[in-house]
Image 1 (cartoon, rainbow, N blue to C red):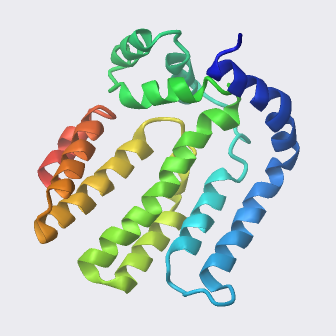
Image 2 (cartoon, rainbow, N blue to C red):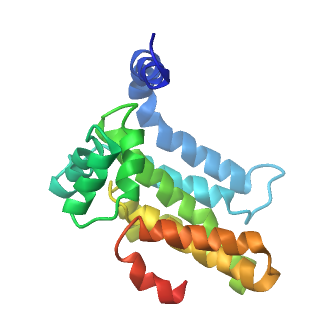
Length: 219
């Protein structure tokens, strides 16, 4: 009897992957249209930030697997495809990397091993940074600053490039912004859940990349 991972794999390879492969080139255009409608469609509130987020996602997934993998990016897949979590952790340690991203990628790659699927988590993580950046900017400096920060995050080449790069940098960025946002909530609203979220984000950041230690004084 097939277990849950096998059922998911069979459904993906037999049903969804063929359709997704033929329709994937349309995805950025669909996302672009959705972003424009969310931000400026009839009855919508311009400046909500959701349209900017969807536009950012379109930039991150367009031609995501057009470039071939090279050593640094392919190595992420090699480490994550180790058969056990313990071996994934050892592989990350051998590369002087923190293990969290590779462990998450290990589970993600149970569904598919394609280049697009390997790069997709960082594209989604990079997209998730956009609304968090909006929230942080809005709380610190006001609505307009939040929107400008989100727009910069969505469009800047640095953010787009590393959102298409299968390494742990976007996960670290997401956790750093989440830590700053939860710290703001903890200092201004003084609720224990904000402190808990802040502590969790900081710990997860440390398990994501060694450079998180550099961010600790700011977080």
